[in-house]
Length: 69
Image (cartoon, rainbow, N blue to C red; front, side, top):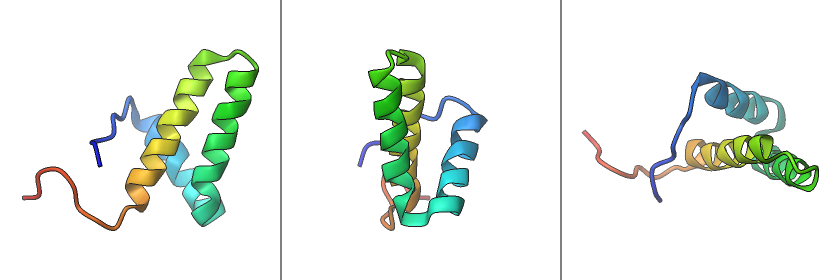
């Protein structure tokens, strides 16, 4: 798994909010929001929700990746 880029704190807060409210379905909700943004032509929000989707995947992963100290 590649390291996930985190633009700012709001991305982590959005991911945590979806995980807290939807559990395992959080990643699907983020993907759905990204698709709706893309379909509406909102590139900025599409990129935002895709980032949240990847962040949720990273936070849900049980394996360590990258450098472990």
